Image (cartoon, rainbow, N blue to C red; front, top):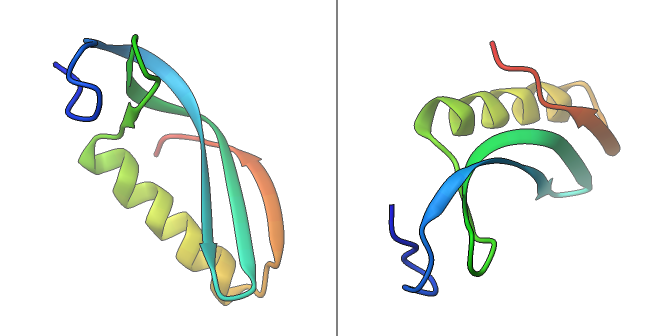
Length: 75
C-alpha cells in the first residue's frame, strides 16, 4: 500500500505503540501489529485490531484506570 500521508513510501508489516486518551484515562498499547510506512513511519491498523483496541480501552475506562501501559494481545 502506498502511504497516503507522505505519498512516497510503501507500507510494510511491523509493530507500533498506540496511545489512547479519553478524559482522565491514558492507555498505551505496545507491540500493536500495523502496516508501517517505510518512509515516514505512519502506521495503519486493520479494522479488527482497531476494534480490539477500542474494546480494551472501554473496559479499562469502566474499571477506573487512569494510566496503564500494556502489551497488545490479539483475541
